[in-house]
Amino acid sequence: MLWDDFLNSDWHDWRGSGKSEDRLDRPGWLRAWLQEQQLPLLDEPKPHELQQLKELRSLIHGMVTSIVEGVSLDAEAIGRLNAVMSAGPVIRELRYREDSLSTGNKPVRWDWQQVMSEIAASFAETIANGEPARIRICDNPDCLWVYYDDTRNRSKRYCDDKMCGNLMKVRRFRARKKATQHDHGHDHDHDHDHDHNQT
Image 1 (tube, rainbow, N blue to C red):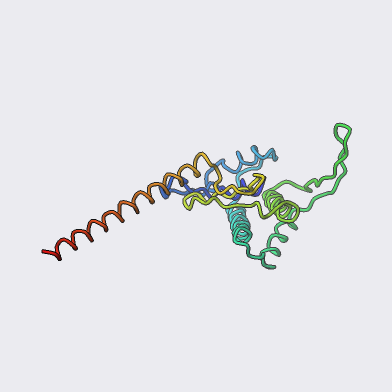
Image 2: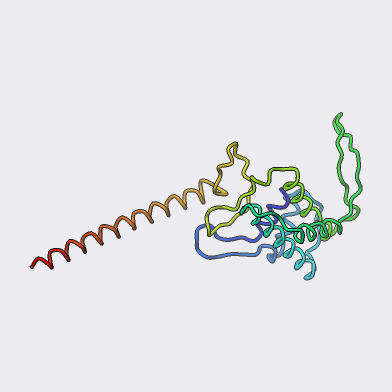
């Protein structure tokens, strides 16, 4: 989806090195992202447009956090999202392709304002007509990748079971091992104290 790929431009190293990168600041990243999303290419955004893109990302991330935490979306956030969408007008059209009809929206123009409007609309579509309860933030605190859980029983806790899932499994195992060793250490201390008191 357009909105979650955009949101994850705020990258954190899932392995726990503490490294992070705002990929919107990386020259060429947005252009490559547009290409990946099969959207028309644009020149690099101007500083004020880049700032607006970051503000939109922050707005959507805040709304995602509310959804994940089971908190109702506030009217101010919805109003701000609507304002972004209204800045990108579209023409409604009926399309006929391969013997089938569909409706769609065609942008009036194509610039960064329109891109932001498309991102906002993609998110609005997901939370209004999709299943917002499937939106997740990866349980690995070093990762925090936002994803849409498409498993049947909505049980996916990590963005990637092989990477973050395995890493967290190893961390839990090590923490348990450490706790067990710690407890045994205390037992020995008590035994030692007991012996000492007897002498």
